[in-house]
Image (cartoon, rainbow, N blue to C red):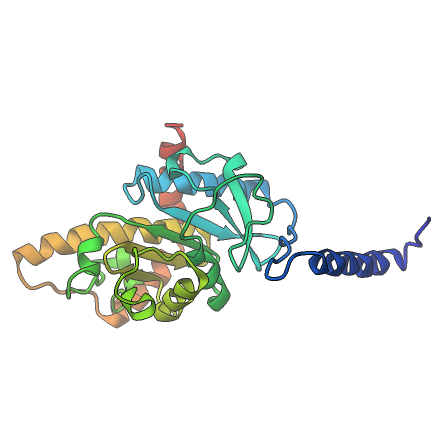
Length: 274
């Protein structure tokens, strides 16, 4: 059967919707159809996501655990994240596509990160966010587990603003969780608690960084760890003069224009080791 050019796309679209409805109706009750792919992501985006994984390992932000994601360039309701594996080992073939409910589009037997809901739920409530890092970077965790606020020490960490809030999973999951954001409910609670902050600490766990690009979120994750080391050292010396809110806001605008400089250096160094 032939389809005219003027009606073809609309007809195919209606047929596609009908086919999806029929397929969904055929599923057992409570089972949802697999989400439809947004199509192939831009090659440079995939390469940068691989590089981001390697950089975060190279800079001591992640080890065998932790993950970084980015919104799909073809559809803001999809995001890209590696399969469950050590970040330094990630290749293009390991990257999977997810909808914002954190359901994989085409798993092909690959295992997903347990805490992928951090990414999906944060993308839902933060349309300004294009990329997310979750890590357990060692210098940051003491600030998540004490009453000492993580605040910007210098202009390089000015994105911390007035300080990073702390998410306590007990507030959403009760007193006996395994500390992991392993379902949409906990992911939503974390996203709501984070608000419009660029970084949130997680008691007994780690942190989450969010930003307007993959390059920016890697920068923030790296300098959150750097700032934590600097602040811990400064607190040993005596009272600390942090950036004021006005200084942090002004410095952050400037630094946001300069992230390509460290990104290029980090990428060359990290990818040269692969």
